[in-house]
Length: 213
Image 1 (cartoon, helix red, strand yellow):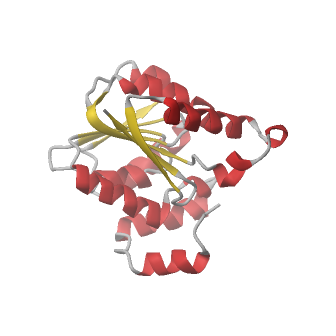
Image 2 (cartoon, helix red, strand yellow):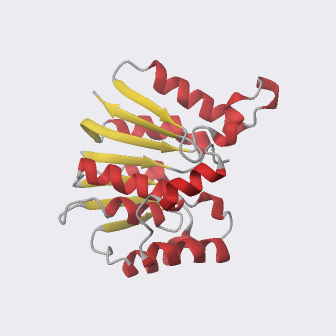
Image 3 (cartoon, rainbow, N blue to C red):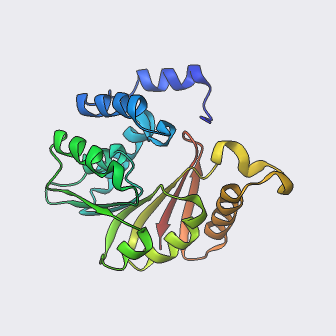
C-alpha cells in the first residue's frame, strides 16, 4: 500500500528528478520478469534514498536485501567516489540479474554483492558503516538491527523499509500475521530504545529512520 493519495503521488513524481535510463529499465524489467515486483523500491522511494545518501555522503553503506539492485544503485549514486556499498541477499537466482544492472549503472567497483543468509554474512563484514538499509525478511528486522548496531558509527543512520506493512500494523491482534507482529515488535523496540533518534515516515510502505546517538 502507498499511503499517499495517487494524485498527490503522481504530482510528487512529476516534480522530482526522473529516473536514470538504467533505473527506468531496471524498474520495467523487474515488473515484467521477476516475482513480487512490489518489493522494488521504485522511483519515489529510490530518489529519497539517493537524496539521503547525497546528504550524508557515506563512504560505507550496508544493505540487507538486494532484490534486483534498484535501491543499491540509488544509494551508491550519493556516495563519494571512494565509497563502497555492501549488499546482501539470500536469493541466488537474482544475483546475476542484479549484477547486470549494477554493471549497467557503472557501479560494479563500488557495490559488492554478498549472497547468503544475512546473519552469517554479517559475521564477515566489519564496520563502521555510515548508512544501513534494511529491506529483507520482516520477522528478522529486530535481529538485524541488533546485529548491525555495533557496525554502525556514532551519528550513522539505519533506514528500515516496509514498517507500516500496508497498514496492517494497525490491525487488531487476532488479525495479525507473523510479519505484521514482527514489524509491530520492531517499531516498538526502536521507539523504546534510549540510544537513538527515530522518525517513521509514511513514504510508500513506511520508512523508519534511525540515528545512532
